[in-house]
Length: 253
Ligand code: PEP
Image (cartoon, rainbow, N blue to C red; front, top):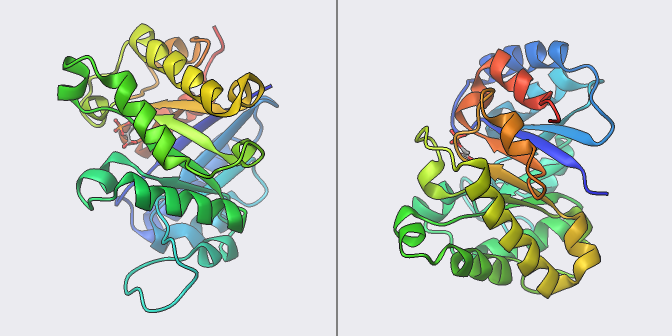
């Protein structure tokens, strides 16, 4: 049985003091969860230690927004897997479209990060998704297939138990344009089929595949009602206490 993962990507928002205050308030709202639901928040690196303290003793899990693919050394400005683990991080978001588009991360680098995270015992959240021109050209399934094949290269079937996929159509991120539940579900079904071809049906059935792109408290229940949508990766709405609380505690309809 796959698990639901409701996650907040705070991006480069909230100072450490603001992040701590928000996390304490969120933690007060989320003291218990259904047994098949996980909630994760991914603050900026500078806030990880504060947020870890704020969510201690609650079911909220800690995530990071990126990670370097090397053990340690002369990589100015970078953060290693061991540093994240030392701060209690469990999940690491990799291949977010902002990393791909702004920082030119390609599938090969993202794959190195995914494998390194897994080898270290971190759970990668591998982000994939098409740009608007690709959707309009009808090549969405090809784009996500390539991102999955190259991003998961040499990741074993056993390791897939610790991998989360986040399908985030780039045209829906931060734009207020959510994919309809039906559009999202169609691509999630394609993703499940691609994972089936790569790893077999049993592994593919158990992979958590999140949807991301303007998820809000108003649309979360309908998105989560889809058969192949197993969670949400939330940007903007994860910075608002009441909406994110509602997203984390979505209604199963
Ligand atoms: C994101 O950046 O991962 C995201 C989905 O952002 P938003 O929810 O703001 O669209």
